[in-house]
Length: 416
View (cartoon, rainbow, N blue to C red):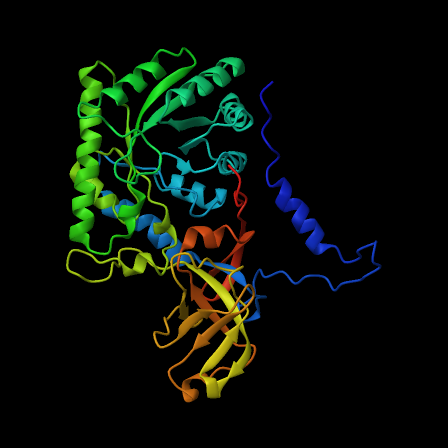
């Protein structure tokens, strides 16, 4: 029988219950009750903590729609792997998004439990237990779609959907240059057509279109170079679309594009959905991309920060040590930028990895380092927002320097 929907936020509830227990019975320890961050200024928040600037988050949601206004053929399907949070997904949908993308079944389950009803799992899912969870979501009324790049995927999806008594939507992932998953089209795209025929031949499946995403293109610094790569992506997508239509197969959608490239895909006129994810937060790495004039991109505002506390100082070494190390933010795309509590970047400050729970911030001179005292708070702009979010259990959402809401990151975790 299909698995039922998981209870919403079950794990987080257990974690919260454990965190608020004041009398651990086994050890006979009595702890002081936790202080709620709600209504507290940032200076009073325990660290490390993951913050969202609500004003900037709201600006980014509106700005995406504004930039896409000249391209009405492109619908917004934000990638929720960036935030993993039903509350943010619902804000995006309220602003006009048709649904969201997820990269993992566990993300889809958590977002569905939080009220999201249209989810594209932009990955190939192969374990039957995971496919059965997707089938359970379909049975619960969630519009689920998933990717395939091999006949084996089609066979597995078809059997699970048939056993569950549902119709599952399957898109073909096309390798448009990422060289990861995806069908690499023949010169006539005949292999893409053959796979689409296999999907359509299964009574329990429906062909949902093409997934044409090039992740590496998002971080090409030069817009001219990004534009050339995206032109190749669009050409491949168009070749596959045309071959399918010539074979009498309708292509309901072509989805792809990310924060670094979505406007280029929109201008190319082939994609009908964009999967922007990081735009909601931004990070230090995306901030290194250039626009058409050679300036740093500035369409979106930084809304995600890691709040950290100064725990030691060594002015003669030009050093300030903070309590946010590798367990508080991701270093895979480089170190974070350092900012003060207003969000102003301290360009003279250089963050270096100090270990799991420590960060070392170096300043140009002993005088500049000596301005900081133990207990001072700083903001870090993560090098990569997505894996940083995955390290935390909640967002503390602030406005005008005061925490106003707490949103659980209910889809965090490593598993598919």
